[in-house]
Image 1: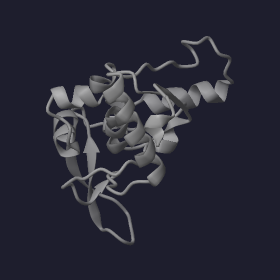
Image 2 (image 1 turned 180 degrees about the horizontal axis):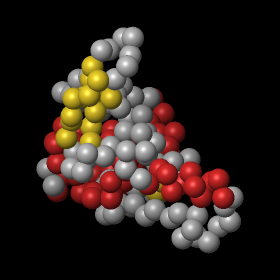
Image 3 (image 1 turned 30 degrees about the vertical axis):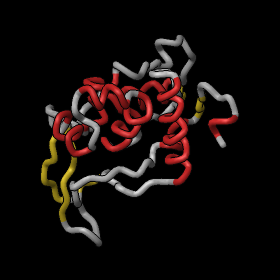
Image 4 (image 1 turned 45 degrees about the vertical axis):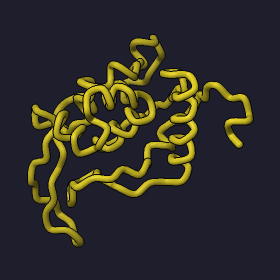
Length: 169
């Protein structure tokens, strides 16, 4: 039915609403790794794959102010939507291969009533992988900050944005 609509590209604003795409993995008890997904994300994923088959590299455009909030799974999901050919060409179609390439899991103790210990995914510098995700994201994304766009921001907002860029803060 979608194929009969004549759509040749979709533009999605607030794309962070589609980051919960089901992703199979063998990684267990790692903070931020969720394997379940939403029907909304799966629906857009299938439509974007169809459009990519019809018009290679031009199926979907995402816009969002918060593409990655706190996990490497979110970065991988964005790449699945926006650069599936890049994943395939590097042999990184499966999350576990992608995670082994761009990060590592270290054992940490986290205070929790349900799980006494778990792993945390980090990049090669020991920072959470989403902070240094530019290693693979430059091929399919463009980040624009308020400063780059010359947008006004209050002093507290500028300090908060600066803190988010510092490792281990």
